[in-house]
Each structure stands twice: as C-alpha cells, then as structure tokens.
Amino acid sequence: MSPLTAAILAWLLAQPPYSLDHETPRARAERMAVIASAATLGVEQSGFRGDKVELTAAVLTTWQHESHFALHIHADRCRAHECDNGKAKTLGQLHVTRSFPREQWQAAAGLGLAATTDAARETARLLGSHLVTCAKRGTPGWGHAMALYGTGRTCQHAKLEARAKGMARVIARLRGAK
Image 1 (cartoon, rainbow, N blue to C red):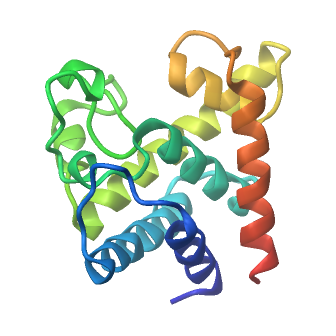
Image 2: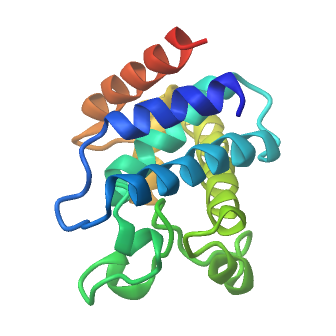
C-alpha cells in the first residue's frame, strides 16, 4: 500500500460510519481499504495534470458529502428517495452523461475495486474539468469546482465554504501522513 493510500485509509477510518450502516469493524475496514485504493488509482488514471493530493482530497470530500461513504449506496442499493431518485449511482452520485455512458455508469456501481476505481476516475475527471470551467467563469478553486459538481449548473453553492474547509482538512491529513 502506498503512503498516500495508507493516509487515505487512516482518514476514512477516522470518519464516523454512516448512521444506517451495520458493518462489523473488520468489514468496514476492508471496504474502506477498497475505497482508499480506488481513490488513489482513479486519480492516477484520470489524466489530471495538477496536484494529485488536492484532487484526491476533492474526490474524498465530494464522496463524503454526496454519500457519506454509506454501504448501501456503495453497494448500489439506494432507497427510493436516494441517489437522485434512481438517476445516480456510486459514492459520488454519478449520472449518465455523453462522456460517461450508461454502460460505464453501470460498471462503476458496486463494492469491488474495479467498480469503485471507475467511480473514482470519473469523479476525479469531472472535478478536474470543473476546476478549469469555474476558473474560466471567474470563480477559481476547488470549492467552486465541487459546487459545479453538486449542482451541475453553477460554480456557486451555499455550502461552498464548508466544503472547501473540509477539503483543506483532508489535504492537511494526507500531506501530514507522508
């Protein structure tokens, strides 16, 4: 396990489990290890040319806010009112798009390393693209990129500052563990 993956895993295990999850500590640790490995692999495979630790932190922060790393969402077992009423899958609540067609969207759902890596790669690709888009719109920064990810329309969001601060804490944790 790389130092970055180990730091991600330590951060994930420090997060409180989703309130409806009933995993044993061992099962949760194993699933968090999959998420940590997938985050590292997905960011590496995303083609992003900037700071990979920042992008990794953006992916983790996005997943934390979108799904709380919930087991049932990770396992593609969303309840009727969740996952944008069935339009979203994965920890990142990804939708079908022209650049992420239905076949890839379906393959990215599930608990396995391959599926979770696919989800991480697409989340990272979108966040990297949104970082550029928001900068071109005059609102640079990861908080704005995460706002566009969440809204699909605008680089502004009421919770933008809270997410940016949360991401800064993740970055500090990941960089401090190296």
